[in-house]
Length: 145
Image (cartoon, rainbow, N blue to C red; front, side, top):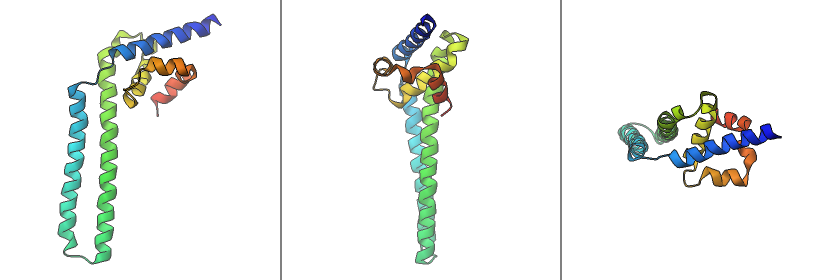
């Protein structure tokens, strides 16, 4: 039982470290903003191409083209949003991950990923509500989601 308690204490210390060290800086905001800008630019570019093509095709072809451009825009937006989150995780891990023991770094990175998803909540608050979410097995699984 003391081994279990020691693991819980280690994870709690990592949770507290993430809560205290995690930063969402203007640079991180710029990364997300630039991703949104690029998405809008892609959509606008393809919309202009679509408008040009509308004048030379039938209604059916125009619907197919518009649907294709919309699907592409959604895919690009999804890709860029995920890239922005990954960048925030990487920036925070590079900033603070080296302060953590080598064998605990994967757990630390998984906790940072959790914090990025819902940065308005303290991880310690969630930890106190449901410790089972913070088992090493579940954290490592979350790392590869």
